[in-house]
Image 1 (cartoon, helix red, strand yellow):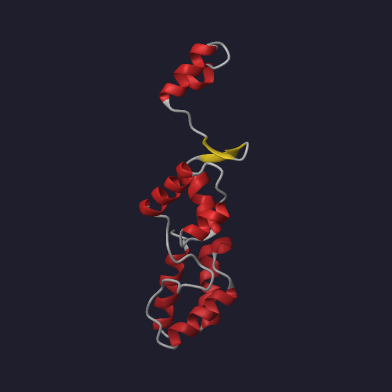
Image 2 (cartoon, rainbow, N blue to C red):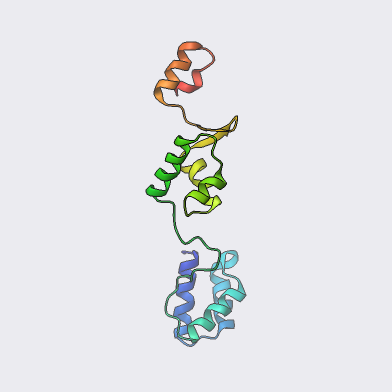
Length: 147
């Protein structure tokens, strides 16, 4: 049994189309889905929407919800700013580019794999050449870099 939110929304829409009352829909869904069942207030709110003529089961965008995603252009722009100035801070990048500080932080740490060391942005991942040169310095202390 698929207990995902979208599956439950489709079941709600079907039962509401058969003119089932919201209370009865909640009871039936609670029996079937158990703990994974949507909250009672969610079911009632959805049923009101279906009564008002709503046909789409997808959620509407909410205020504060991200409107854009991190794309390759944004990632490359952030990377370029960081290469120009290794001491730049996320707030300055957010001002320079039309994106939020949270998006800048996500791009730097998750997409580019960088972090701050001594107030400079550095890559957390070593390249093959960096791994090899560290291994040449001390093979016994750097065995973990080879794997």
